[in-house]
Length: 156
Image (cartoon, rainbow, N blue to C red):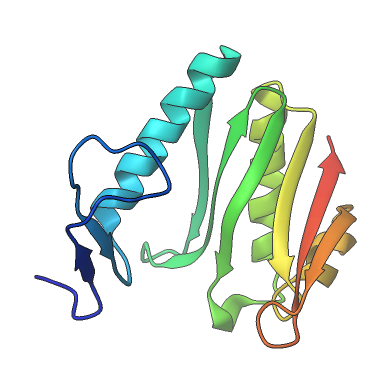
């Protein structure tokens, strides 16, 4: 299905050498493109450093198998990163998030990581990460609409 916001331009990009006309497409989201870019960049980074990137996931489910919370991230060399952390609303404040982080940190240590990094918008969870020993390393103000994107690191 074609995205109604897609723009196709069959003219060469004049800012770089061309190898044919090419087609430029702009859209709202493209899962196939995201998977391809992830694979290509991961392969490039691994070739450049000799260090593979490994995915890391942690989940907590209830007795019925329903997801209470999850974490996805990665480790690359001696660094672990948290990409996404989510806890179901009715279980927030009950330690689910802290258990997810503790398990991710434990696994990162087992994989040889010496630090974990994460970023969180100010309307999300900066106090949560700070309370778990994460130290703010920077912030970008005004994203989105008056909030900030806050970066953290924790030495393991």
